[in-house]
Image 1: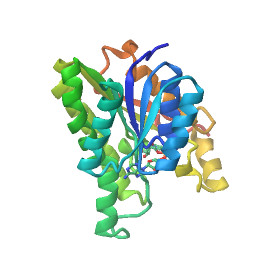
Image 2 (image 1 turned 180 degrees about the horizontal axis):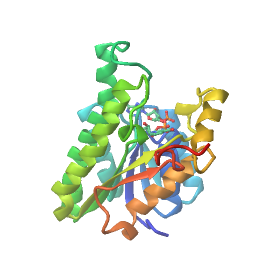
Image 3 (image 1 turned 90 degrees about the vertical axis):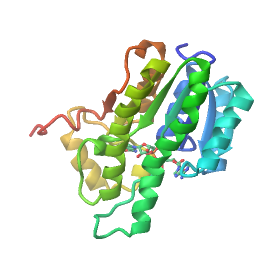
Image 4 (image 1 turned 30 degrees about the horizontal axis):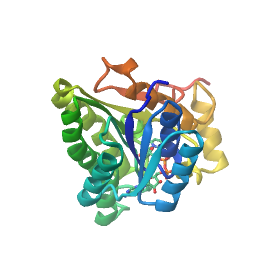
Length: 251
Ligand code: NAI
C-alpha cells in the first residue's frame, strides 16, 4: 500500500474525479476527509470508502468560504490528528465568452476554481509545516494550458491554478511540502455528461489514445503524486489527457 495511514482531504469528492481520487487513495491505505458542498454525495463516498476497508468522514464544505475551509481543516485534525495530503479538486465549468457571462458568473467561477486553491493551501500548509511536510495536488485541466471557445472564466481560473501551483512549490519546498497539479483532458464525470454524442466522437477522433478518460486515470496520477515515489517532484503539471494536447491530430 502506497499511502498507508496517510490522512488526505479531497474537496469535491462527492462526485466524479474527486470521488475517483478518494477511492484510489483509500485502496492505497489512506484515511479520507470527503469535503463537498453536496453532503449526501459526500456521505455516499464515505460509505464506498468504508466498504473498501478504510476510514473516512464527510464534511460539508463550500470551498469558496474561508470559514468552511477552516472548519474542514479542523475536522481533519480533530478526527485523524493531522493532514498529509490535500487535493484541491472541487470545480465548476460553465460555458460563456467574456461578452456572454455576467460579472457574477465570472466571480463565481474564479472563486470555486481558483480562490478555493488559495484558501485550501492557506489553511492546510501551516498544519503540514507543523507535521514536517505534506503533498498538495491541485486539479487544473488542459484548459489551464490551452484555450477553448466560450470558456473564458474557466480557462482563466485553470491557468491561474497551474501557475499558482508552481509559485507555491517554490515557497514551500524547504518545508518539505510538495505542490503539484494534474491537468485532466476529457474525463467521464457528471461534469461532462451533457456532451453530445457528436462532440464525443469529434474529441475521440483527435486523441492519440482514442478513449474517454476515466476517474481512475486521474486517481492513479494523484496516488503517484501523493506517494513517496514522487518525493523529488514538485511544481509539476501532470497532463493526463490521452495525448489531446500533444499537437496536430492524426488524420
Ligand atoms: P463533478 O461535477 O462530477 O464534481 C465536482 C464536485 O465539486 C461536485 O461533487 C460538486 O458538488 C463539488 N463542488 C462544486 N462547487 C463546490 C463548492 N463551492 N464547494 C465544494 N464543493 C463544490 O466534476 P468533475 O468532472 O469531477 O470535476 C472535478 C475537477 O476536475 C474540477 O476541478 C474540474 O474542473 C476538473 N476537470 C474535469 C475534467 C473532466 O473532463 N471531467 C477535465 C479537466 C478538469
